[in-house]
Image (cartoon, rainbow, N blue to C red; front, side):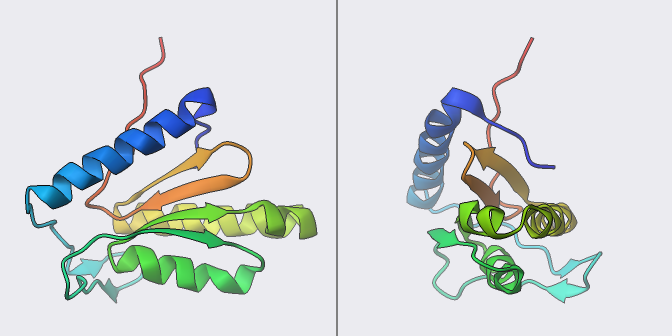
Amino acid sequence: MVRYLGMKGRLVCLRLVKNLWEFIKTGVRRKVKEEVKAEKVTIHPPSTNKIYLKALILHAPEEVERIKDEVRSGNIVIVRISPIVEKSVEDAKRVINELSEFISSVGGDIARLGDERIILTPSSVQIWREKTS
């Protein structure tokens, strides 16, 4: 499920990056699942034990596998989805649903950052959301 973070989306992203930096700085090793139930995929931790924050642009549905591979590798991915939305709203919906299901299957997190971007995280990183009353 993709959630809209509103005006505080940038603040959430900055907090996420700050928390990620603290996580890396303290030398805490992230726990990596051996196998993903839904897709039966073995997750291999990066050999450098580093988490990268990557920004990618989604132009076509065929590029979804690259995004999935980055998350499987333990990286955080910010995806600009506006190019695929401009081409085909139906393709964009299908791709976002596919990514949402994938993220659920690996225990990661997904959120919307404004109208043009989404953020996907591996299971070791959770997106902070402000509680609404």
